[in-house]
Amino acid sequence: MSTTAVLNATVRPITARPASATAPRFDIYAGIHKALRTLMTDTLGRLGRCDLDHEADLHDTLDRTSLMLTLLAGHIDSENQVIHAAIEARRPQGARKTSDDHTDHLQSMADLTDDIQALRQTPIAQRPLLAQALYRHVALFVAENLEHMHVEETTNNATLWSLFTDAEIAQLEGQIVARLSPEKLSAYLRWMAVSLSTAELTGFLQAMRLGAPAEAFHATVSLIHGELDAVRWGRLAMALGMNSLAVETRSQA
Image (tube, rainbow, N blue to C red; front, side, top):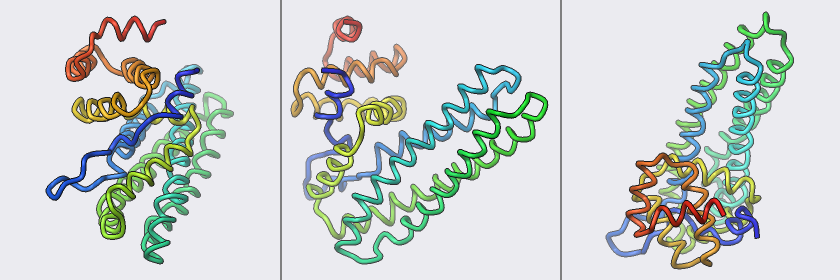
């Protein structure tokens, strides 16, 4: 079974935590929003420093920008079809603000896709003006998304917590994971790996170790390992009580 197939079948919600009277409520947005913030700001930085006269750099950067839009589109669809639908079923118009934002974001993404394609096809001498315009448009798009995510993490979370138990919210997250293709799931997990703290990654992997087949656990560890530098990987392996050499050997098998 492929790594991505294993992950798609067995990955557990990254924000799951035991419920108690004093524990924080289940935050369905926390992990994925960290990942998307890192993806967006990293992509914006790559656009800013792209060497326009270097074909490989230009097309790699535009490919990354397209990937950002693809992953954000998938995230919007999941929120619309699962989170917003659940809120609206119990409180009509309860997710109206962020639903309207999503409509605007999708239009912006379509415009950005056109801008990316135009820059790909433009001769070198004409690239600077188009590249500057694309960079500024992406910057505004990122700014709007950062503000939007804050609304989701405050207003939408408050609505979810008033309408659903933590167990029900965890089920919503499970529905989102089940909708993802193996490729998208792997991409989201890679950005989570570089965005979450060691404690957050440890909690996620410890839960997976208890609740998923060993093959799925080791596939996820190998994927995350490939995204971490030696220092962070060492901290994670120590926190998990794992032999890092053994995991490295397994990931190369």
